[in-house]
Image (cartoon, rainbow, N blue to C red):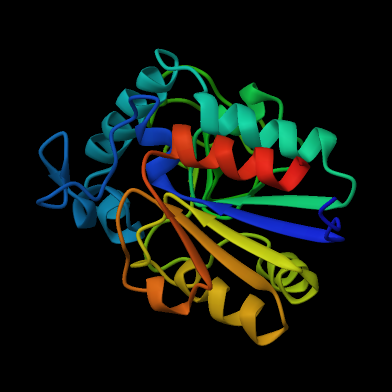
Length: 234
């Protein structure tokens, strides 16, 4: 029987949610709904045209309600539930598909689409519907201060100290559906590997950081993640 590892850390990216039907920023020409990332995913864009940014995320929030977790999300929830060691799930994704599949304690390093916060007082809570500049903050009562709880380009990802700690303790690090373009997430494999973790990349194709992984499973996440989880639990 395979010896259980004490700690598995899994990083997921847009590729896992794309198989549920969610559009991604990084398609072939870097556009989504006709917008450049720089026009909708940075603080400068929000300051310049807040209505455009709010519309963009309102559409994404509505689109999230139309999709469901896929076999890869369900397999990772099963891994967390049934694996005898510790399984920590990090995600670059802002959707809630991991939670809906049953995963617990997911670390959303880039924020969550179904949350908003106030840029003035820091109030934060869940938010299901559209968000506009006229919506007042329930805490400070100011308008034009609420924004999606999304880490935009130029901002610091959430919970980085906690992420670095789990990566340094990991015995296995798996990256699933990530592009290898965006830092600091693209550097997680080198940190985990430096501290002795076995590393595996599960992706539909190679990435810029593929050479840093010990092992590769190439194919759809819905197939390859389920196969890898069976292996871990076997």
